[in-house]
Image (tube, rainbow, N blue to C red):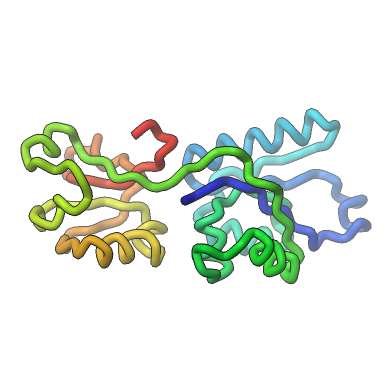
Length: 201
């Protein structure tokens, strides 16, 4: 489950904030993160603060390192990503455990932002009908399908490696692609890819 929350750097001193009061908001390289970054800037400005959106900086580790280094002041992260990929905590770690570990790094978090966005898998409906693919386990009998996932999903333990192990998927032609862009690019010939649930799958 990927529930959004806001990570805020607490490392910048009061003096440093007085010299440079502008809030630096970061976002990852996908549409939802960019929109959330823009929203953070609008909310900041509505409270008479100045804010700059540093859009599409990269993936999770790029944003996290930028936050720790004080290059950005805040960005939206997801609870599953925070626990597994950043803090190396069990998926069922409590919010209090997360807060304690973040506090030791001078990072604070807000309450959940009120929506859940998780991964989903997409493939063309014609292909799903032809191959009779209705659930993930049906892919076990389709080893020749070409698959495209984001580089981050390919590397995450709870991404492709975990999915492949859980469903014993035999696919070998698995490559990096932006979420679902491959489906509309015939030259790439991707049979299936991941989407984010809020994309409208």
